[in-house]
Length: 269
Image (cartoon, rainbow, N blue to C red; front, side):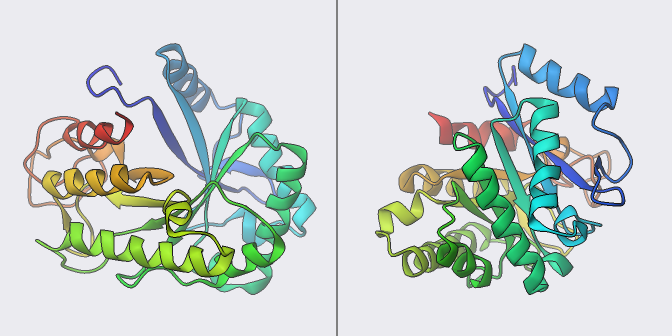
């Protein structure tokens, strides 16, 4: 935060610990000192957090909570525990593929909207280079559910070296078109409900997002006033001792510490 000026962070993931109980990584309770200390430290420095539910591996609350009311209650437990003003639902893999789970998510978020109208709600979706599957977007639009930002994950596209920025922007343009169609809104409004969740450095599918890519993606996000710009993950935003090895704690590229975070800080200016 001090080095970059970026103040907001997404913490991931809260998933199902069994019987629709929200736990961090299905391991740590909401009273975990590790997580509370992190949130309190960020806030003490003038920042804030949103919590992301779901993810690729699971087990997710979205898939395992027995009803929309139970799912909404699980979300509310986390919101209340950390006094959150924003949440992210990262719905992919098995959770996304199940129509019942999609409907449960939409109904749960409608309940949250009614009870907490000031809460900012974001949904993160997998995406191909041609944009995301539109099933959940259409389902939400038909139900009258407005989302503050639909973010797409613009990585794991195999080797996209030297094309990553262009492919990311093209996929987001497709997302914009889907939002125009589903919600009957203008292109400008659709961009303002769209978001990008990129990756910094080398992915496990040999794709590379360079710092130059991130700067170009940031210019695009700022130009279109996108609802959200983020990447996976801040803890990778530093060089590796072994630059050719893909690991969770560094980018696997030559870089300065926090160079990707500094790049996206321009989105806020």
